[in-house]
Length: 382
Image (cartoon, rainbow, N blue to C red; front, side):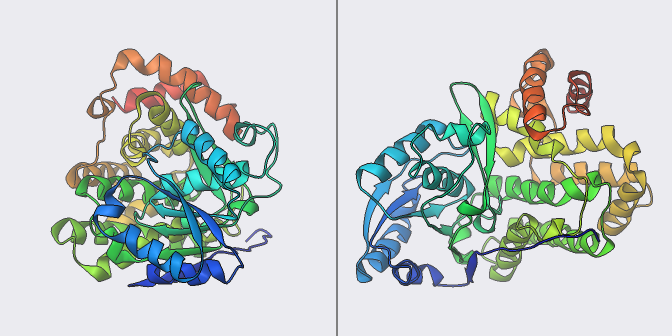
């Protein structure tokens, strides 16, 4: 393994009723007022909002609401949150929702203590030097944002979906209660499965050096996602399957799957961000389209690892059998595998290429992912 330093400061509280303790965790940090960020009114209809606010008030913590965060979170809403955080002098951000809510909260936390435009952090014009403390109750297992230092937001004006990464935006405490995730629709369950698999395979396939122990860890995670997805599609109330799925999502992007790994990149995310930015495609749905196409283009670069993937995940003997079986599994569970299923047609490939090439520059992989290469991959997704 190559040298590494690993430090993850997020405290995970996992299990039933853990959300009832959120006020205690925040009060323990000496915080008296939070910006409570959430998505739809679902958390109010299902009682989670009342549970959370009761815990806050019991611990002497005031809250200011910011609802309306959407899938593929928008910069305009982040601006609204920053303005509210500053106007009300909040001392922390509490995210209650999925990855989009938490990513927005991270951007708000950084922007609330910055005199300039928070978008500067996404375009690397400025670095995050501080942020408000972040706490979260995660209600959708997918992004892994509950235990990492990254966030992704879409600038709807420029049609760019970019990321920030900073140790200052690790959540202080993340609460994962699988019971809160059972109301997730089947549609978003399968999108989430694709997202977790994408997080798992980026380094697995692209790294110039990949330790065997990390590969085995990733394979176990992917096998868990496949197994539990199928169980949950049949029985959404299966708590143990829901728990394992939730923990697999967290593990896929909390840093542990990249320990000792060298020379990796995120091409699937780089390309998919353009689909989300341009067409508001659900992130996981876009990934299930891009992944098999990218694999078919990339397989010759690391055929040995693709054969290992085929053998370990699907008991297949060849690289292409593994790729085709993954694509078939995506189709089986009901997540898209073609651009046309997302309402995107061949005539729009040029537009996607231009947008994705700017992403490739941002990700530092434009030398490999030229406009010609991007077009080849997208054609394979038709």
